[in-house]
Image (cartoon, rainbow, N blue to C red):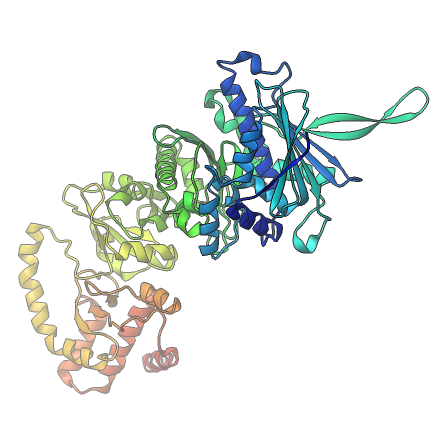
Length: 637
């Protein structure tokens, strides 16, 4: 029978032109797509074989690849279900049920050229023309005797003719373009190039992929070349196996394989989704934070996306929130319809459902680790705690499961960290709030005058020193286990019991009246720096401290926002003075003798500067503070 010539539908012509003149820099994906199609054909045959057992071949179901460097050809062959003549026309010559129209529509609207998503619209076969000048498909349907040869050079036409094939299946022959590194066309007739591509994209396809290579065999007299088949893929998609069948060593080896991290992971999480969306995932928590972890834009994401064990995308950002960007692993969906535009991927209902499931499993695993092996959890916290706390922004009731994982330093023990639930367990019956303080470091915080009243009462205070703490605590999460959060450096603090309050109220009223004029004098001297001067009930040893008013931003958060280029309205702190301190009592004596004494303004500035430094802040004019301090020392000596 002579060959019949047919024209492609207009949409197919457009698609072929796109592939022939491909803008994609990574053209290796064509082989992934052809292997994926072959795997689908084998799946279909295995399914049909449940009722048509005579269709199943005696040999193993497999995919074979053969390259001829001299002829510049590449063959991809399977012994799967095959296609009839009509199916070849329907599947390769028309838009049929494929997503060709949708693919073209989306790629015209997309600002990206994303080869990862070619196969998701049923157009993967046409990616062959990124690497080939001519393509032929010889196919025979299972249960049929006739075979058909389909050929095209990527122009507007294709030919069909009857042919012969010994057994059902499909053979695709690519007449390759010359290798061109500038255009991203590798030498696809090269054995090692093929090995690398299959290992990267199709290592976990569940059928053996065999490469036919020529090897020299030593005979009795002369060496001769023989064809042998070598396996290319491991087929070890361990996430598809029951967890009980996978050893710890296998989990570790797989982690090293996908991450190239030769340290053992801290833990792994194997999980599966069933129902409307089916997916499996194998996730890992590394033992050590990568160097780029805190640079969001530069940090490498570790989730690889597979669809039915075929690699689709590296570093899939949409499967894990930013605060879990350190999680590594693979997600394998059974049927995932992706959009061409990566910006649209996050809106896909399947992706959202998978992401929600993964986040839940990771946080549950961390909670279990915290409960069962706190030492191991603290090793995780030391590496990834600051990033995990990013998940508290913005805070809502859904974030309580993250709050349950938070650890902090405290005034109770110098070297140990404590969890929030352990802190709450130690709280006294009358303590209504979780007391905390934020600052640049624990060393600065433990010396803060704000803690003096709490130490005097034997009250534990949590000390937070990561930059992110300033932000999430500033939002004041409503409570944890029924206990509200209260900053020891914000607003007024009242730690007195009911009995103490009855005796202290009259005493405080007397102190306020006695120091009223001095407070006003000091306030006038530092009016450019503070909004108010008042007596303190939180100071015991220090003469002064700065307090943030309720509703105002902390100085540290203000500084962070300004560094980020945001406009922040200037807010002044409150200067609190210790009425029991010898300095204030001495100033009262000076004031009573002469309320206009110039030393009062100097001492007021020193009290303010001292409070700034004690709080870990920076002086606006260090030289002026030094001059005042030197003058005071000269007079004292």
